[in-house]
Image 1 (cartoon, rainbow, N blue to C red):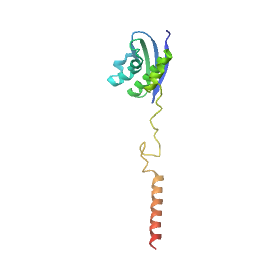
Image 2 (image 1 turned 45 degrees about the vertical axis):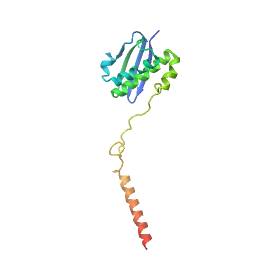
Image 3 (image 1 turned 180 degrees about the horizontal axis):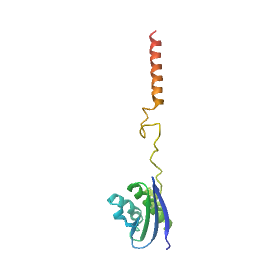
Image 4 (image 1 turned 30 degrees about the vertical axis):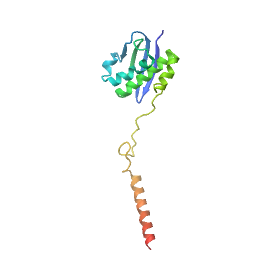
Length: 148
């Protein structure tokens, strides 16, 4: 079997996976994956495609990952591993797809808007202040016209 090369992305993380037959060694940026990812949850995310397809300890992986945080990096690696396993054997695709491992998560961090003070707060913009004044003015005009 030759080396299978696949790319996975999540948020701003990009993972390149080189998969070949072997004994189950997973190296992430020239470190063992258990050293690179400290928590058990992140280690589980990397092992998840292998456990679903029952191919643990059958492939050696060399992974380079850049950008983002550790969670985004782990999920990018998981997507790349899933894609490499499907290229190795097409019969793995329904199993991986049913668990949601074949779809790239398109959610990204919302960019900062210069009009807003913070990401989603918009109450102090000039447009809102003008709109509030207009609605108050219309309200009081209606009140005075009803009284007379």
